[in-house]
Length: 263
Image 1: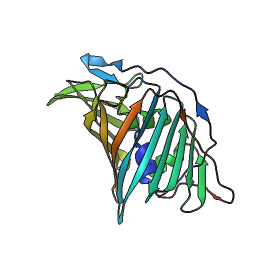
Image 2: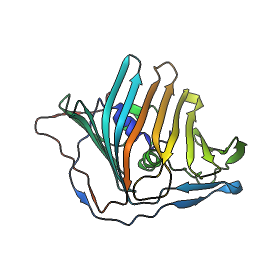
Image 3: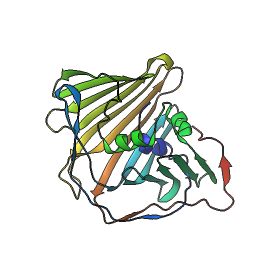
Image 4: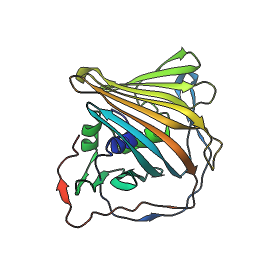
């Protein structure tokens, strides 16, 4: 499925896993408040358009008998890198670095690391994802229909419901009439009885922009025959348009390489 915003959830879910990566600094960038997305049938959406974002907060994750909470730090450089760190009682347990073509996770708790592509992250989430989708999900941005797909637009309360196929998936998005911001994203793969639902709430204006940003993101993954996976991300602080952000990532000596991300 298409999820980008779930990286948080994925790695957060993962507050039980980790990806390693090489460190590096990304230089300063210019911040723009928002970007209007052209959509069919008069749907008006407003996406983020800043180059950098940093945030921190708490994540609560449940799957079957697992019920965990952790602190997280998130850094994003648009279209380039997503960095996530999860910690328990002040000790970092997992760090992840996503780039357009790679997924890297370091698990300090298990002294292991993973490097691979999005097939493995898709396995963890239970749905197909790409970097662009993870980024959109984390930022709460509307995802336009691919070329050739015909969206169906309906009124739904104070929102517009936009649905379109993206084989083998069905993408459904609720967009606020008042703000143009995404309220909910649902990706369904009926043939495999899998779905991923992401809800956005508690909209506030972060430091550096007038554009409302969802300080709470709720994620629910469902897959026939398996326990549901859910994660709630509560941001305590969000800043955009910073001068520069570092994305440190390294693999500690002696850590064992994993061939897949464990659920």
